[in-house]
Length: 228
Image (tube, rainbow, N blue to C red):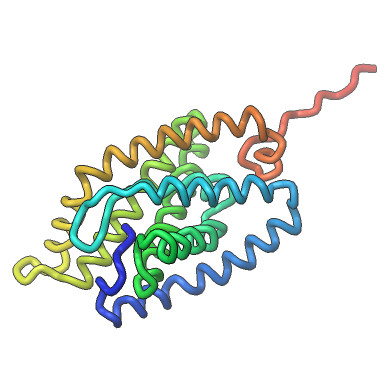
């Protein structure tokens, strides 16, 4: 992730930016509506963005032109929905590009698509599936954060493979090579992110239960009928 400045061919950079923009524009609308309807969740929303910023800023070298790190976007995706994370993730990646030299301006669209769009949608889908199967919440949160992280890197590997196909094995061979280089660092990072997200969700259940219920992340308790 964090494909560095100038690493992608210009046409690819423009294409990924064009693909990301509709999601970001809708996310602006979704976030504004959410804050109008549920102003009490503003701090939780800000905390989700801060979590993604901090955890994704800690990177390990992985492959020429990129790096490995946790994403942190799974938490916001499972709390607010994946559409919200397109905006939060874009803000996070823009700040990291300008302040920390992680990623690049020309590759921002590609990085947004992998970390702020693809990863959150996978995390959200995994949690919904886990709830549908009546799995324990902790298990669903762990799998959602872990697989959302891994999905980000598979998309990044795909982006790099499209830009730099292998002369012999083509795009598929290039994808397998990029994914294989990511795997040794990203697999354990994804597990750590899943565990950390479970810890944070348990903390929020203890101290922000009302907000989580208003977001429909937790079911509201049944009100018992008064006895005559």
